[in-house]
Length: 199
Image (spheres, helix red, strand yellow):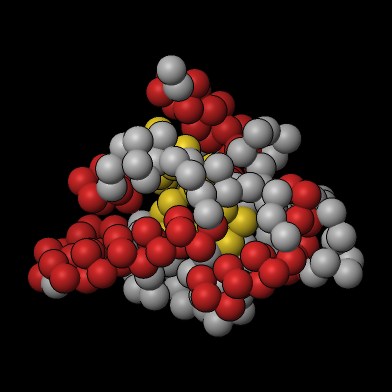
């Protein structure tokens, strides 16, 4: 749980690429309400602060398309987006309310191989973004959180650059939510990946 001033700091400083694993409830269709940002309005959702967590952090590689609204990342209303699988996978689990971010900030690209090529061509970019991630951890006052990394590339960057025990307690690689699999099977898969990696 965090307080309102803490939330506002995160929103102002990191809201352009970060968010939280909370969404409006699904309605008739699996992707319904994914883009409803009133979930972050304390007037309409006064219980928000009670569910936000800093001991679990979900990390993707990069955004697939640009946006400007704070906390919009991982809450894409596009018909082609797969963010809804994350909502389905983690609802009613201890990971609901986790902090969410990308390791590479402000770089919109749907092809992860192109992201990798760009990072190889610009090695300083990776280092710069890892430092921003460290700053996020400090601003969250997160002490050795469990990090859930979506996909091999995000996992690899985190494992290569972060110190276990000092900056995280556990780093777990999860299947990426863009993987072609039903939401039900995705939930089963990622939860089993977490269970298998847990001590």
